[in-house]
Image 1 (cartoon, rainbow, N blue to C red):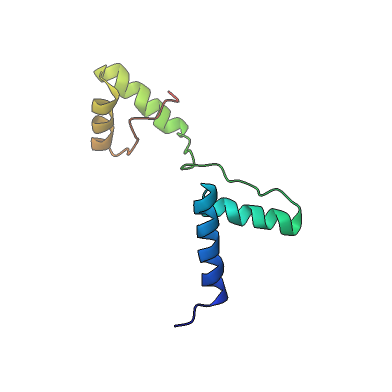
Image 2 (cartoon, rainbow, N blue to C red):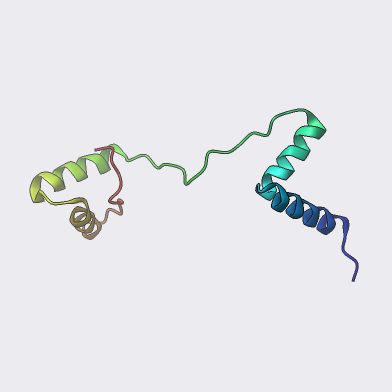
Length: 92
């Protein structure tokens, strides 16, 4: 079975990455740098942050004042009220 050019290139990149102890993506970035002369633009890692709305902030404050409980319990209370707000939000 013949491998197409893309598969050969992919295999070569994986091998280079393995030898150099870097990720295959960095091999591709280096190749693009050599071809274009421009540094690769890296994306910000992780999930994008979602800002809380003013309404959500007020609901959290009111619920905390009423129940004075920790974030996990407060999250469950808010979920019962129809708000799906994670316990790790620290804007309030």
